[in-house]
Length: 257
Image (cartoon, rainbow, N blue to C red):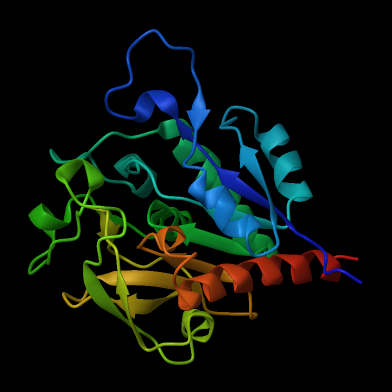
């Protein structure tokens, strides 16, 4: 019998939060299709999450019907979500996305429903668990290496920026099957204080935490600061990460009966 294909919720971003979008367009949500392809290639059925942050009942109904949560990269998180005033280098924010994703992350942690956070998605998980962020690494993090290899600055999304060291015994280490891995890097914010119940599982050369996971109950709740969806087609370690997330989502649903 064919394995159950889990339904994976992939969150979205407000179109108007992106630089260069002309005024006057209808309020819309968007997301890079690569994230949907990444989970469908390894057996999942992806669905788009509208940013209905003012309709928690509908969001909860959607959450209940899916088997896993994927939170992609995107614009900066509003520092108000972790109790700080904006830094002068804070970029664009998307409050509706913040509220939607933090709810989804909190619910996933409560239910031990599989969650995979990519770049911003790792930051969302950390903030949902009471952690905080560096609003700009270059300005605030002493000794920071360059992390902001953005496509609009002339770097490809597949630009290999630096290594990370992966913690032995971690779920990430089990999924990636390597102790060190070279990642792309498209962020200027980063994980500062680590949230409740989370463990740092990958570290950059400058000491910045590049991955976290929930350290209990065997749950697949993982966030990585890089963009693995770029390499799924070419790198088996990356594909294993997505496959284990999707398999965990399938197992989670079947355990619910």
